[in-house]
Image (cartoon, rainbow, N blue to C red; front, side, top):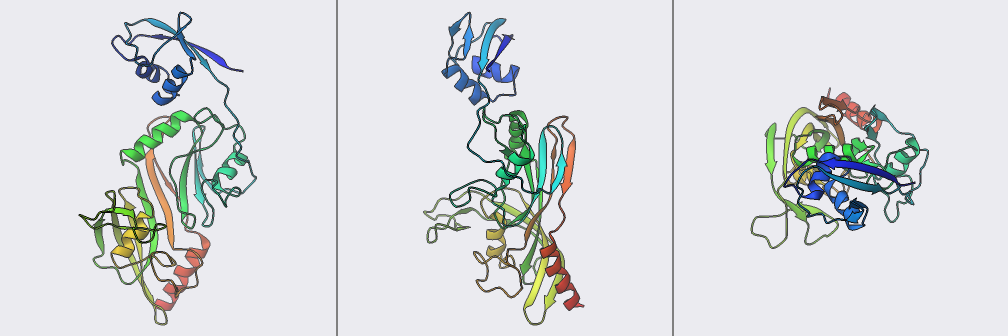
Length: 314
């Protein structure tokens, strides 16, 4: 059943939609605007407009609709839970798992698994679905944050938008990286010749692009006489463009091992995915603003490749 809220708004001069979002932050301002449009927000029994300027002390009645079920299927898929509290989950996603259902991937996704793990998930956007805060490519493993409610989703999204979330990736790249530490500042956009790929777009090009910055630091050099030289690096993306680290490292001349899209089509190492792992996230926990730093172990298949190279290098 729907539930009713009775709110007293003491915000003279403020717009109604903004005042509601401040008084009841569990819903975003756009969600309040939709409730107002749907006639679910009234004053003295009469519908109101989002732009109404308040005098202060108005009593507002709100009918919140039931959380709607979606057609997303809950599936019992094992998850590597790195952290969990009442508001959020941090999952170490394996390579090969798609984050969201899409044509060709209607099942077996992270969303399906989250719904199976949290059957009592609180509604996100008035629907019962997980709030995936950010994404990883299918073949990239590592940490993904999942919000259990609207308030947490908006809080974490704001942190990503303001670039206050610290993100660290581990990557094995081809070649011995020089210089050992640098910032790659190169705009990224859709490759005009290959629309399924991204690329660095030169200034003045007719193709559209967005600013992108990736810092990297060399951790270790390894090599194998039969296949070549490699570098283990940490990457710290300052922005969040599609395929950003893969595109930037290839642009710098050090493509990620196993990346047949931006690197070699024929790989020298026995690896059926690219060597890129989201290893660390640091952010403010929405419940109390405490700094939280999470780490996800390197998957066994990547560790095996690295250990083999190290042994050969010795």
